[in-house]
Length: 127
Image (cartoon, rainbow, N blue to C red; front, side, top):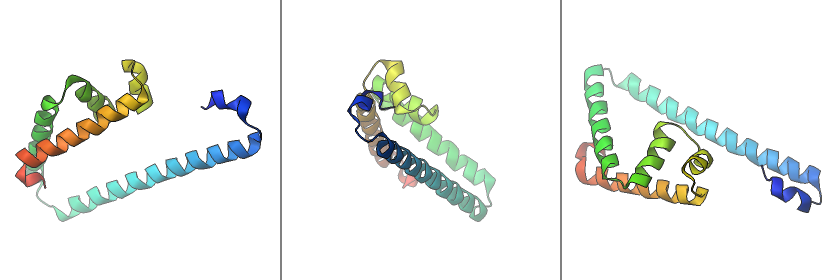
C-alpha cells in the first residue's frame, strides 16, 4: 500500500505509525459495527418467537430485493452483487471489472439509491 509515496516520505517512522494507527482504527470501527449489527439481530430473534412468520417476511424481503436488482442497470447490478452478496472489496471489484475504484463507488452509491427508491415505492411493509 502507498508504495508510490515512499520516495517522498521524509520521516518514515512517523508516516508508518500514522498509517498503522489509521488502519487499526478503521478495522476496529468495522468490527464494532458488525458486532452491534449481530447483537441487534440476536435481540430481534429473541423478541420474535414466530419462526414461520419471520421466514415468510424474510422471503418477502428477498423477493423485493430480487425485483429491485432486476430494475438496476447491468453495471450497477454486477457491482452490487459482487460487493454485497459475494463480499468482495471495492478494490477487487475494480480490478476484476477493469474500472476505477471511484467508478465502482459511484455504481454502488447509485445502486443503493435505486434499491431504496424501489423498496419505498413497492414494499409498504419494509419500512
